[in-house]
Image 1: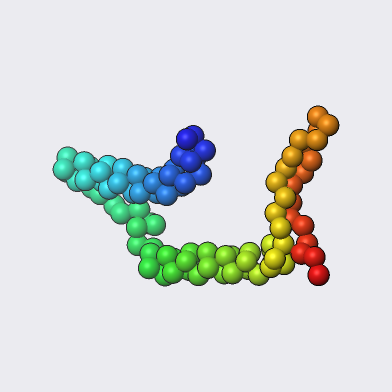
Image 2: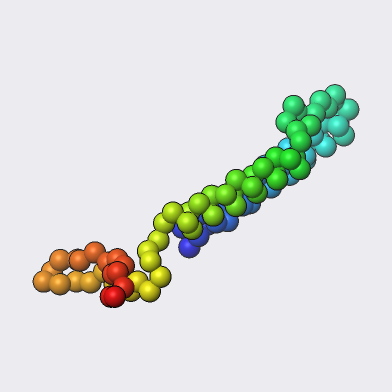
Length: 96
């Protein structure tokens, strides 16, 4: 469960939590009458940055799918315990 939290939930939720904390902090300052200057990153071109991130993610997924893996038809052999030693698993090439 901790692994799921650390690998999936935290990276997705953390930016949103930080955003809402900053928005709440700025709203409190404005309610007290303190001058509120927007941070420099507030005016960043968010749609362009989001599109660039999406394009990089897609390029990474395409490159990974084209440059890794085995031939179609390969058989996966799981790790096994033989004579007290763990033998590594892996893919076996298809027989021709």
